[in-house]
Length: 188
Length: 317
Ligand code: FES
Image (cartoon, helix red, strand yellow):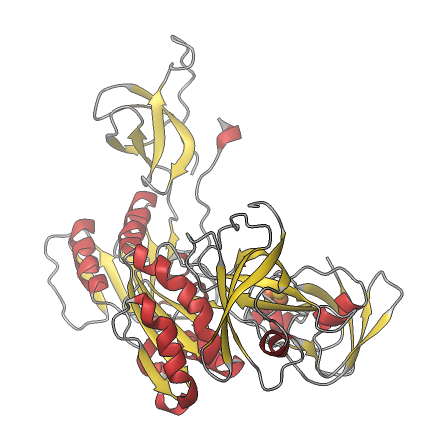
């Protein structure tokens, strides 16, 4: 499988030219090593965090906002992007599936490559899309997984699809029936 | 004729739009269909105003892409013409034959644009016209802003008459148009398309930059000729020193000397002609290189940029 590696590579976030810089963090703290050495948290105009906690309250007008869940943040982000104007830069830190989900939402509203920067410091676990039933199986740790949708045993290719925001999985012995390779843990 | 790189064209009709603007209808000299001219494309003519001298001038194709039986170009007679536009206005007659390179586009509509803002300065309207069809086909929101002199307004309005575009905004003179107002507050996914005089394009580029438009959303078409100080150029690998005159570009000088150099727009917009600078300071006049590339000083676009001093050493890739 090494021959087919096509996983995203992530550069530490550095500030591009822009009018407003919005940093989105999956978690309550920014993990170490996400920002380029010349950048600090003070450089961002707004910081939005997914804190996964039911007790957070909306803080209108504050530069730092907390959200109960990724969905909660995504709804607010879409609302914001629908009336946002040119000059916004969005930076996203979190798990691979989270950063690419946010990336996809931003693109839906017209942001391009130079306006969104993603960084996934922990991308060991993968989201896998079954090539047969198209269901997604999340938090996969090994090269062989059971599809949550159709129960097929899938071999996970080392290919990340930005379009589907997932790695592709296909029937394990589809090339040679009965031949099942060893299951290996993903390297991050 | 689709794969032919050089075309023999016959001037089928000339429309006089006003004192300085003429529209030329060009058909294939052999009567075949012409290669499609994609949106934003231009033709580079190999003109022969005087025996032995070849001038290469590029003009946008303003007829729609799907029309294959003729091309239309609009030529403005430049006051300081070094031959190209003067030749078109004074010497070219209906029935004459012209040579041109097949149409090429460096100014296409961005496929993900959600809104397009088109800004034209005077005759810079021509590449913009060639984008309108495509933008309308994509049903993308569009705004057109045209800055021109009073004397050109009627002719330019007439050129746009076929485009059925809601409210092109005309401004008579630069001072009546605030680029900042046009660009501020535009929705995400806005792309800018600009063609016009050097200072206008530079100004729009700077304002866009300040407002946070990424450079990939700013598209420029330029066919500008440059004049400036004369300077000498050594071409690495060739044992030759050539002199660039005040009224010619480095690219033209290289061509005159028989040195093959790539090009497309000849206006500092496409980057096809970039050469390496080995020694000497450059006066960059293009819209293609990034600020970092300019600061590094090791490349230049010879179609428009010149030496800041008296000498340069370059290497052609
Ligand atoms: S030919 Fe296009 S930049 Fe020089």
